[in-house]
Image: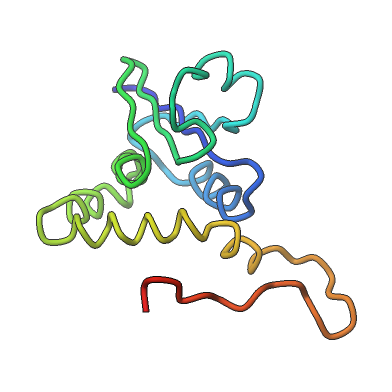
Length: 136
């Protein structure tokens, strides 16, 4: 495999930071980062059911990974994180990695808001307190 296309949510601050991280990390596999809402993404991958809803990785041979599997494929592509991709996909840690990614994905906009450095007005910055939701 020589190249992966990584489709990310360009409206999410956390996703943008992850994209910036992937752009500078040394990789075994070339990563093309493409905003899921772009015209090019819709033209090339518009039939993918997860487009814009999940992290999606598409290999040049047509294989597709979404969600936690896409996250692990991104780690596998990186020189410094390939070993972690093997560990996290093994039987002991795979369920934990899957749950972690599901929670991270579901809360990505809220988490991203913590990184967004817009000026605060008065004594309120507009970041809602974290919700424990069903994972108490």
